[in-house]
Length: 284
Length: 156
Length: 104
Image 1 (cartoon, each protein chain N blue to C red):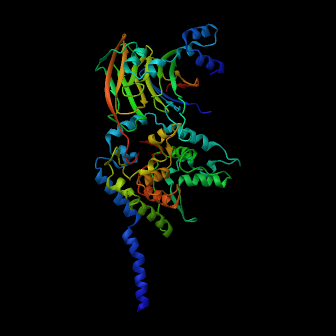
Image 2 (cartoon, one colour):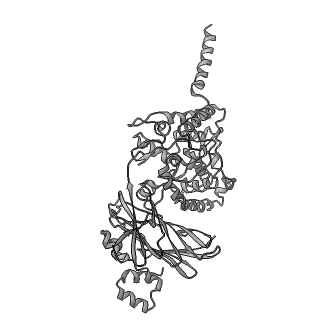
């Protein structure tokens, strides 16, 4: 009797988390439906433009910038770096053979063999490591330029991130989802507070961007980062922004390309499935 | 640019020395035209700056000048500004930011076939009036717009 | 060797619209180096010129209040696809660069 009860309980307990957490597919449906309802006048495809999809005034300024965006300087730099061969004679093209056809939309993905979430920046440094080169720093500079070059070649390709039926993949997805909805820091705010519940609203002098479409524009050229850079280099990776956001709610940030941020990227990009690659992009 | 020419330009801003240098064939005519109106661009006074660069500080507002700039700048370091002038004979366009430390920001001298249109991105230290100045037929016309510059938000 | 000037020029009905993006720090001279506390020297483009068919169509004079990595757009008539334009700049430190581009 006891044994059956234990087994049954174990079964129910095992199934409960799945039921309460929902499936990624259901999460995605709800996410898109929520933003479609919140911003009825915004075409779904426009969410790749972040805050400019929901705020007319800043959109006009952004359209001026799009006449000749500053990030084009860094796409060029990325192209130069991408085409430079490693000391062993090989090059990035050997690691990314389909790069010309567009590959940005495939990241991040869950690698069953290693049990890790693989991001584009992660793949770039793995390529370097496999070819005897030193890894690049994760947040700014060359990795952002190379990522920008690859993203630019992938413009318009649709994100279709998969969460395979694998407990580790699901765990990574759920870890990212948990980060998104959990309050943190001295300001006790979750990503969701600004970018889900209050998307489109004003926080002091900023308009909050909707989370739907968030990762599509990365790596990003931020005017703010450009202003703080002596050379006017405003390029930064998604994890640079995650770190900044955590700091802004006065929470201790995680490291770029840490499991936590990779999981968050996995969740956020999955939530942008159906939208297209829009990187690099220019933002405030 | 040739090192010697560079030294020549730096050391000989006085008209006399420049004249001698041209005569000696050390400076090309193009390099001479690059004599930069220092007084105008370093002046903290709007009227002094305008007089020094455009010959006068007498501005007449004109509705034939369209000044496009945001109501609220997203970032004061990069404010997109476009000036379109429909005034006949527009020969130059100037951009002035009243409350900047050095109000005169740019002057554009247009060739005879060049349209009265310029677009650029400027730095604004704080909320200020942006003035587009158009020189046509020896007279100065203007259009003004206040651009708010804010800082602070969660994004910084 | 990558040049500092990116140009995009298109002609329509005889009028060329030119857009340039120039890589330049446009340093005002008012910023201080965080580590040394010393002022970073002013380093900005003072003049930009555009030439077409041997004539100067635009001569712009700037101070350091033009944004970093400056953008400039202007229009002129008498232009045809295939014509060459030349954009040049000179800065306060005597540095310069120029680029030629064909109007599309």
